[in-house]
Length: 254
Image 1 (cartoon, rainbow, N blue to C red):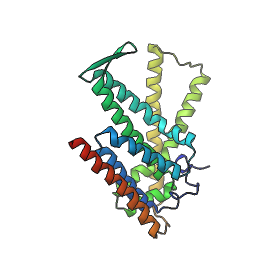
Image 2: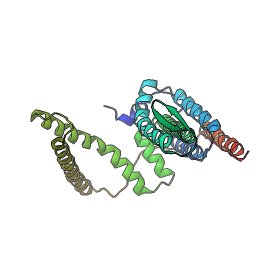
Image 3: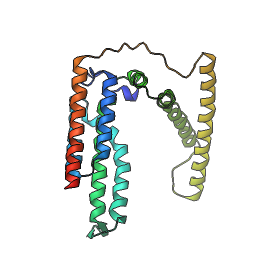
Image 4: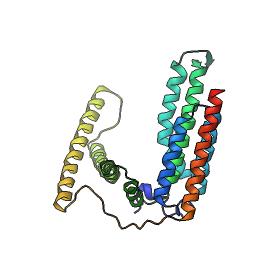
């Protein structure tokens, strides 16, 4: 069974054939550029560019939207808070008083977040995770950070399995989710038990890895070879990112 992050890695596309090192470097440039944007006039084109990367990767749109959904929920909450609490001119709608400045700021945040998430889904998910970890090390990302990412991804499924086992045990004992003090106390105990079981599992796994000679690194057999197309793709995406920042700087200064 393919891991979740590897779901799109088998799809043949220009992104799949792009050297993971150059692809990660381009992703870092694009994300940095989007973070620096200050106007909606450039944030919207950034979303369009990120969407074009998804199409270039030939990824199923339904699956991409499924991955974007968690970030959309968090961003939606941020936009709501900004729109309600920000000072400035107000407008009444749906029985609430909304800040025009807050709505504008929230829209900018939402556009930038969507551009970043879409670009990362397109660029990172188009390569197998083993290539991503190896490429990070070749780009001299700190080994400790790579190790954290690697182990967190691998063992999030273990925690999910523990959670499902606990949920099954609760249902077998007649537990039904209701919002009352007793159920909140039960959920608190369950979360604590899940953390304890996960910690104990992590300790056993770490001891087993040490017994097998684990030294903090993940050896790889990947063979890296830069082609002209890799450089061209990097230059195109990095150039587009730089152009967005330049236009944004001009608009913000006008």
